[in-house]
Image 1 (cartoon, helix red, strand yellow):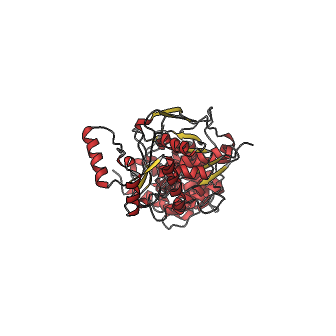
Image 2 (tube, rainbow, N blue to C red; image 1 turned 45 degrees about the vertical axis):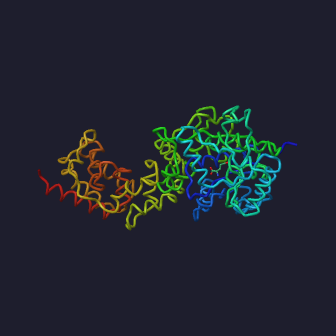
Image 3 (cartoon, rainbow, N blue to C red; image 1 turned 60 degrees about the vertical axis):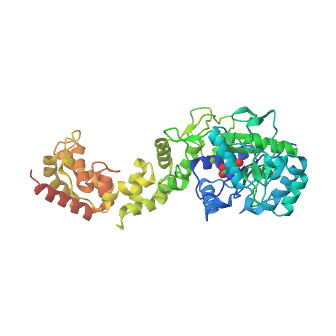
Length: 487
Ligand code: GLU
């Protein structure tokens, strides 16, 4: 029987998820789903000094917003728990001791001072630092003595001195490292916690993970992991390393710089579905021109084969475009619901019809975060720059506006019912009666109502939203301003 595919997302709880972390989660999830397998969440918190309060909640909420539900994990349980490494602390030491027994690991009692001086020496000689195996050569009696006297120790992996380590990566192909370049890395730290390098191997094995999907920054540590699997006599999982995500200038996105954080994207008004779609395309291609995928579709159509080796560049313009396309595809009700919070922010306490505003915005909005500034004129219109009345194509200028405003005010004030069609028809009548293009009438009205050269809707939309009284008030005020400004 074919073994079940089991993948894991194994974030360290640092309080943030950038788009690279998110991509690992999505690809892990999809590799499980395309194989009808299980997706597991494991929290890698062995570095206690980097612990951040509330960080695990950020992970849960991000996965939930994107729609990646895990089959096993700290909050949902499962047969391979606990799923938090700090709760598994006691599992690791016996495994490390097993390796000490078999000669694949050893106790190291070296002080920080000694290690620092080795590092300094390597720096001075301009060579790559490598632990010098001093403690590997201690006698059994010396080791026992130190352990009995309670000396601080770490357990180090003993990597082979000679030969090479080769492994196959589903994306990068066969990778070979010279064993001499590998370091006797620490497996168990002096605080008794395992290092990530040890814990990930023990956990991936004991949790029966079949595919390890993670960033390519782990490609070079993987030979040491392979040596651990070998030492235990365990089957090596399938490795799927993902290409780097870089910024426009070619530099890596980093947590430290706060680059491309998922929460920031949500706060700037990107939709989770659009972020998901965009993120999947960072380093994956379906092999054709198709650009839009829902999570459900990806659960069938995703392929490991489509993952690329070369770094993918984070392109906010593209993300914005994808987001705009998602906004356009939403039902108007749905858009009004997600946009409401942003519209209210732009309205600044003014009470206007949210659905109508959403209707005006949906066609012209790329990110929800653009909404407040785009509609700020609805709450208040500032002093109008008379130059705005000039529009070559509409054949509009200050003089034509001055002539048309009284007519516009007149027809609009006589309307009994205030709605889009009624407003439109009355303005078109003015244009027809004066043998001019509609735009010549619409343009100055739009300027009077908004005070802006660019608005997310035309004069009719805005008048309809503002209501009759406010629209007439703004036209009056525009007339007064023009009269006071004869220059
Ligand atoms: N805890 C590691 C990280 O957050 C996980 C690496 C892996 O998937 O093995 O980068």
